Image 1 (cartoon, rainbow, N blue to C red):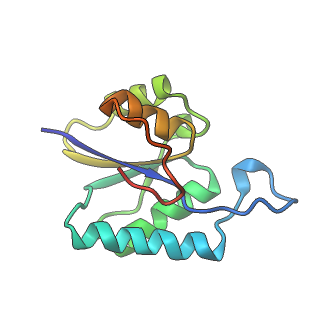
Image 2: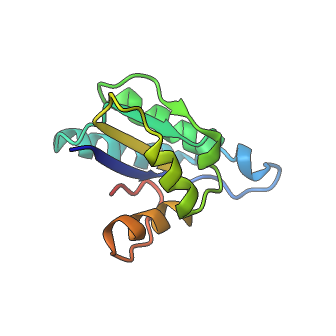
Length: 131
């Protein structure tokens, strides 16, 4: 059975001067992402592959997870940025057949919407949240 781990990017700056796509993580975001990566590692919830939006905050989150977990460098998929649940479902359906457990690192509202679509549970994923 295939498994999916949904990960919302870590806390990013809202300070002026950055376009949305290039917003970096805050120091809290870096810390929170490392904490969550260690938490899932301790529970042995380790995806084989991470696929992330190419936005800076999302890719930085995926990079932090890959530094804490025994996995390769994350891949990117530009369609994850600003994606609806329909788009994310298409991304999920196009995951490589030879990988059984994939982590998808994305943004709200899409990441919370796809969680609802897949589970029927309404949950607003916080930054650095995993499900």
